[in-house]
Length: 143
Image (tube, rainbow, N blue to C red; front, side, top):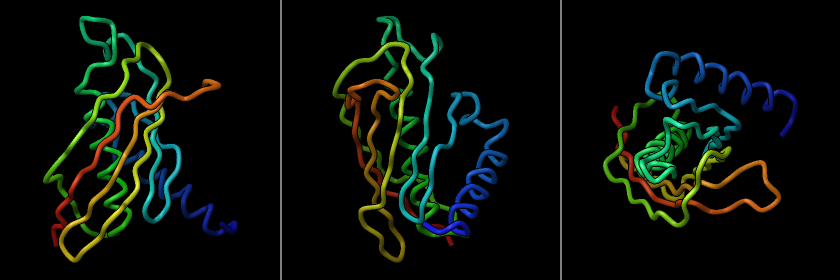
């Protein structure tokens, strides 16, 4: 990636962060890490309010993270268009408590009206990242 592409990616992330102010995204505490034309990485530091009664990350937070990351990847694949989730499939693989998380999503199929994306939720900032959840989502392009 050349300097101009890096700056455009950085500017793009800044625009997304500004657009997310005051939304559910900000309420969750998500932050943007990286973005390309078909891939996105976001992060979350799990806090007490993200946990369920068992003291582990609530499944709804997993779902929200994957839906957000995969939706952003879909939007990146079709700039200028709006996309909406039509299907979200999640596999919960391991529990986690308070921990930094990394969520990545990548477009795996693109057609005229539909985008399919895969995503993962992993622990971050540790020597061995642990796969916590994975999923796929379908997103309808709205013209």
